Length: 418
Ligand SMILES: *Cc1c(COP(=O)(O)O)cnc(C)c1O
Image (cartoon, rainbow, N blue to C red):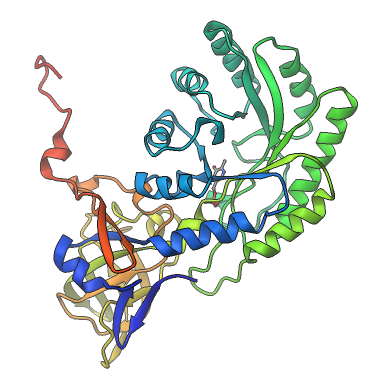
C-alpha cells in the first residue's frame, strides 16, 4: 500500500500532483511519501507488538536525515554499516542505545567512534574483528557489547548479489565455528556478549528461509546457554521483500507470526533490521524524456535519469515499473528506457511495453525508495538529484540538488592546500 495514485489521469503523491513538484524542482528527483513511510514503519513494527523487540531500520537502504528522523520519532533505531552512517544517525536524532552496527570490514576508527557513541551492539563478523574490537575497547577503557553475526547456511532464494547467508558468502562466522568463537569472546576482558545476529539476504519472498535461520540460531543459543553464555537478544536481520512487479512477499504480520511461533516463549529481545520493506515502495524517481529514438527494430526512450541516479537495474537487472506522470490514450510500443550515461549497461527498463512517450513527458520510476538515492554516484560528473518529501498537501526538499561546485569540492592541484 502506498500513496502514489492517479486522480483522473494525473499521478499524485498524497495530495500533491507529481507534475507540480517537477515544475518547482526540475528533474530528475526522488520523491517520498511521508504517510507511506509512517504507515510502513508502523505496519512492520506493530506486527511484533507483544514481543520484546526493537526495529532498527537498515539505513543503507535510505540514509536521508528527514526519513531517519521520522523513524526516530516512531521509536525506531537503525542498523548501520559504517562510521558515516553513525554520523548521519546521530544527526537525525536516533538514540545511540538503539543503534546496531553490522558489516564485514569495520575500520578501527569506526569501531572506536561507535564505542565512544555508546551504541547498543556491535554485530561482529570475524574472529579477527573480535580481537580488534577487544583491543579498541581496552584502549578506551570500556567494554564493547557484541553479538556474533553467524552464517546459518540457509538459501534465501533471492538474487545471488543480495544473498548473504550461504557458506560461500563473505558475511558472518560459520555457525559451526560459532561456539568456539563465543567461548573466546566471552573470555576477553573488554567484550560483553549480548546476542546472536544473522542476516541471510535481501528481497526474500518466502518466510521459510527466515524460520530455518531462526531455528538454527535458537539451536546455537541453547548450546551456548549450556556452556554458561547467556544470550539476551537475537538480531535476525532484515530482508523481507516487496512487490516490484508480480512478486508476492508475505506481509509483515505473516512474517512476524512465523517468527513468534518459532521463538515460542523464549525471553530474548528480538532485533529486526528491515530496510527495503519500509522504504522501497514509499519512494519513486521522477525523470523526463529527453529524446525518443529508433534504431533498426528497437525503440529507446532516452531520459534524464541514469544508472548513477538509480543503479539497481544495471547492477542487479532489477525490475522497476515505469509509469507516466500524465496518462494518455495513445499507441503502445515495446522500448528500452535508457539514461544519458556513456555505458551500454545504463538502463532503467528493458523491452518494456509502454505508451509511445514523447520528449518532455514525465515518467515515474516506481519502487525506488530503497537502494535508490543511497546507491547514487556522480559518475559522468552528474550532480546527484534532489530528494523531496510530500506530507499531505505540501512538499519539502529534504536534500537539495547538487551543483557543479559540489562536484569539485575538496579537489586541489598538487602543491595547493587541499
Ligand atoms: C542490507 C542489510 C539489511 C537490510 O536488508 P533489506 O533487504 O533492505 O531489509 C539488514 N541487515 C544487514 C546486516 C544488512 O546488510
